[in-house]
Image (tube, rainbow, N blue to C red):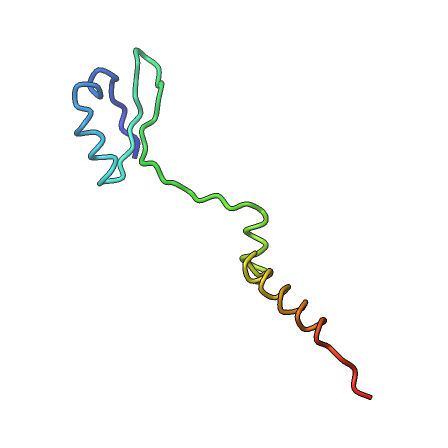
Length: 85
């Protein structure tokens, strides 16, 4: 539920309002004169994934270190590979 409060009330009781937003997940609309100028809500940080990270996560693709390790093993394998007569 959005509570409408004046900016001066918010300024005078900022710690109380911040605690209510943080712990109770309340939200407030700040009013200046007759108009609403801001909304105070709890901040929820969202981790943004790059497209490459999403592909690796869902496709099971190797990370860079694993890929380099496999590449080195393949080089050794090709170098030592011999056909039997």
